[in-house]
Amino acid sequence: GADGLTLIFTRALPAVLFEPAFRSRFREKFGEEPSGTNDLRIAEVRCDILTDFLTRVRQVAGKRPLTLTIPGDGEEDRLFGLDVARLAKLGVVDEFLVSCDRLSPWTKIDFGKFDFGFFRRATAGTKAKFRVLHWRWWEGFEPQNLRKSLESGADGLAVLAKTDSYLANFAVGAAVAKNNGSALLSGAGSIAV
Image (cartoon, rainbow, N blue to C red; front, side, top):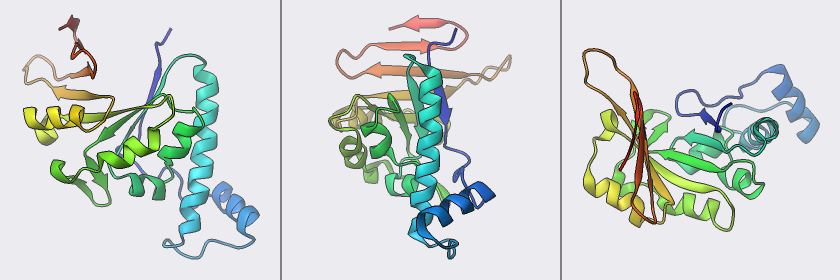
């Protein structure tokens, strides 16, 4: 069986738009229809719906870890329905892999301006881990960025790399433990460093 579940939210947020179930829940909660896309109550209902969904996923996962890969703008995540602090506090998510990008518009976050503090605060005092996700094709493997991730208070980092092999393009994931600096690489095979 599977060792855990990872849901990737870095390409298609918001996951909840204005479907009938959303509109019904909004009317139940506020007694009226949503009034345009700038209504902050929309984010609140999106967060309720995604938290309920992820709670059901957590139940299906049982004791296996649940990981979310999310964009690196915590405020934007919440507007799109991912309330990182609530998910961590409720114990729904075991690990957040936080990418250095935003979705509206889809842009890279300058690593020097990445808000590590938001994710540290959101996961503080919970079992949830916060790891910074580095994409080789997006930012390269800049040693200073990898070091800054570990020095920032993140619980570790994850690296996603695409090979340049003409035989195949496949993803290699690496998790570097903050405490001992060890790495486990997986792809065509596994290599422990």
